[in-house]
Image (cartoon, rainbow, N blue to C red; front, side, top):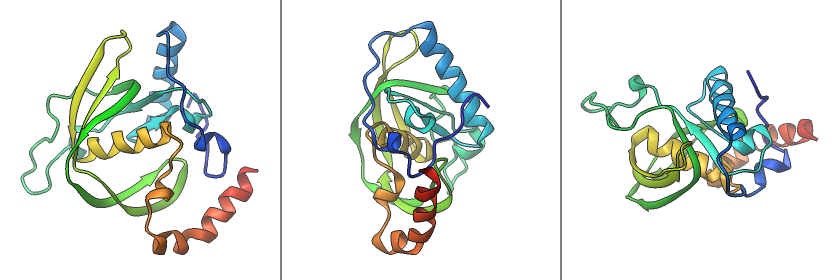
Length: 180
């Protein structure tokens, strides 16, 4: 693992990411290291804040086995090449929402039903500096939205119901104390 995952209570998780101006060899290496860190942590996404950086880069890789419609078993995003490295990403369109269980590498051992758009269109720069746009559905859409929240200083706990927050408040307080 190249980086240690920053956990709940660290102030960097609340910082808004700064745009990436130049795509350098260091940015490309960072993307590779972030993917390695994400895979080693068994995640499907990772944002720069989760490794202590305040820049607008995130990585996402939804395995084909998890990119399936529950009712038919068909791939939801067969045309999206994984892994994705998104620089300066912005969601430009979203559809109706639904709730689904969601966790976060920065808040280990906690999952909660989170309301997110079923589909999103996201624009970003790739590692070659090309402006790209993809339409994401299902788990990929959820992962993209989750990572963009990180880039904006928002955490999954901010989207939890008050009842769920109250139920995990002791765990959150303990994590916050350990982070300081």
